[in-house]
Structures are given as structure tokens and as C-alpha cells.
Length: 282
Image (tube, rainbow, N blue to C red; front, side, top):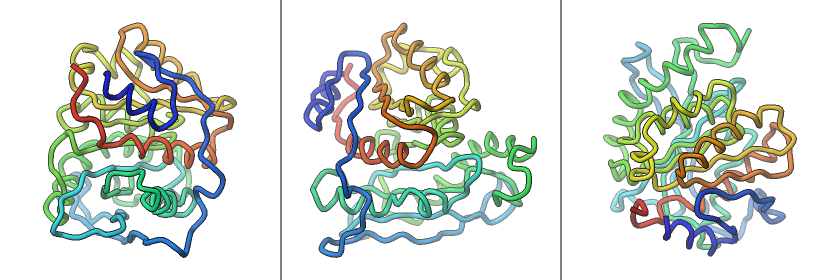
């Protein structure tokens, strides 16, 4: 992916042909709210889920300067097993991180949707979050996302409704979902990121059964983890398989454990790559 390699180099990565490993971190203050810049908006939306049989909630971030006269690409940003649609907002400050990047001219204007990835009628992160029905609900979310949420967003917001303008990424359980759903639906997603992906991540040969198709269709595949995270084996096995099959991707290992220090840094770096590559690198 020559243009991808060039882009990554321009923003500060050294990116070999297949993957890279780096300790690059966001600068101090990247997640501190600034009063001297224009801010985006973050709101709660409700949509009808035929998959679940109820009305579900999500958060949506619209960028500074947002207007319905423009059309925007979309990033679907997923939470972990102990969270809900508010987890990123409460602990990860995506609206602050992105606002600051927009002020520096480093992002393509995009809409970010923060859904609840636990697709069941009682989708709160309460009680035994590891209960089988709650774990299964994270898999069920694939159908809710594809059949209910995405169509709602594309009906109600001015978005570019094609795979080249649709990204999915998430942390931990949401990282596994993002790899599973993104790589399992390359007709829907061209930009995919797994941050510290959890054991729900499918085995690599199931994630990418057709490496040649992945090479043709992917714009960006990002896999990252903290170097002291006990779940790093799930990211590494995916990276190793992609390396073996020569599927271009970014493998980003940084100092840290399984927490928002790592995930905020991932969002800072990953978001700057989105929607900037003109082709699939064929």
C-alpha cells in the first residue's frame, strides 16, 4: 500500500511494507480540553433496533464546523465489556482528543458514533457482565450494527454511505468486535482498528480466510496493544498471521497495560490515518 506507507511516514511512523512496531505516543495535553478552539458536539440519539426488539441509545460526535450541507465519513467506535455507549465519553475523552486534532488540521472531518455494543433489551453494564447472555449480546451486535444502526445513521445524518467512508474500531471487547465485524464484512468497512482486542477476537484464519481479498479491499488495518497487557497474545497472533500472509497492516505496540491511557493514545494515532488514502494500494 504505497500511499498508506507514505501517509504513515508523513505523520511520524516508520512503516515497513507489512507492519510496524513503535513506541510513538501522543504529545502532552492531547486530551486536555482547550477554550481557544472550536468544539464539536456530542449528543445522544435513539434508534429502533429490530434485531433486539427495542429502542436503543448511542452517542454521536459531530466535528467542528459541522453542517448538513456537507457529507461526512463515519467512524463507529466501540467500548469494552464493562462499559456502554458512554464509556469512551466518560473515560476516553474522544470529543476532546478529536477537537484538538481538528484545531491542528490533522483530521478529515468525520462523524463518530459511539454505540452500545451489548445488543440485548437490558443493555446496561450491571450485575455479572460475564454472564453468557451478556457475552452473547456482543456477538449479536453485529446484526444490530449492520441492519439497524448504520441504516439509521445514513438516513438521519449527512454521511457518505459506502465502505470507503466507513470505519470501525474499538477497545478490548470492542476491539474484538471491530476485527470480527470489520474483517467479516469487508463490503461494509474499509478502515478497521482493534485496540487491545479481547479473547472474543476470532482466530486469524477465521478473521482473514481470504488474504488476497483483504489486500484488495482494506484501506487500513490497525492492531495495537500495550506491551504489558495480559491480552497482548490475541493481537500478536493476528499480527503474526497477517505478516505470514503479507496482508498490509499497522501493528502498534506501546508502553502500557489494559487501560484508557493506551486507548486514548490509540485513538489519537488511528484517527489521523482515517479517510486519507485514495485507493486500496493495488
